[in-house]
Length: 325
Image (cartoon, rainbow, N blue to C red; front, side, top):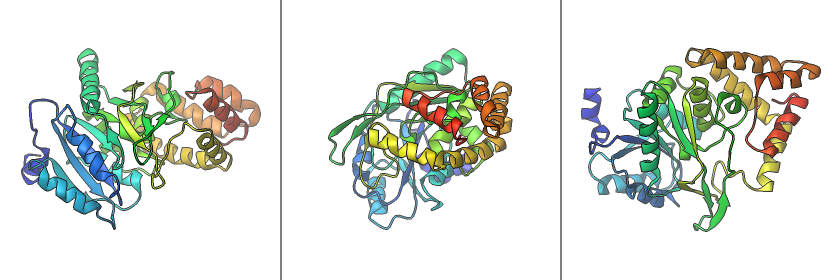
């Protein structure tokens, strides 16, 4: 590891505070990237480095990254080439890389704006929890977002979730965007051991894996990022009636069923990381998906699966009825 740090000085700590590796993925992000990088520079927690993985941009994204690399202190920003297999694999290529080492890790989208205290609050939350529980537990901080338009006009907030974060929820729902996530070394090590997996999204996968291992998942109800909604955004918000209808339509067409298949293949590969009690829940869930109609709702209750909102509960019931889980 010493040799790697010597070759990549961006991984040297800049202070005695915990070092955060910001895992930034870019692709044709010229419109908003500079504003996002400025918001990283304005963080009150200053001991961070950015590892930017560009997925084959054809605009001036790389030039912007290089400008900030030259502008910032030496070692603050490293630029590398992504796998060019989509945003999920780009993020996982960073999260699963054993050569990237820090105290904590934060996913970062190219077009958001981080509020100045985002890292300070996330890191403080994890540090306090580790002092209480010990450092052996996987720990994931995530949270709600504030939606903004292309020109930063407020558009509302992501849904406010009140039920506990758990594996029973993670099996059937992703509760937070990767752009809100900060996680500790234990989560990073699990991701490395399991390796690159073909899953619908990196954030849902990190939530599933952390909760499956009986790790701690903290959902911050107060937004710490401005999540930009625009035509080029790969994944939009879920707060409007139209967005919810679109997701219901995807469920009826079998998209959710396909995503669950992908997740189950990945979870089977990660069985060595999953606690005994959650392995039992996973087994029941697999049985539920193959059960006849008369048994499905009984198994749904036995599994204890739940979603975070009444609309999600209706969708869950409908999916079980139509065998689309």
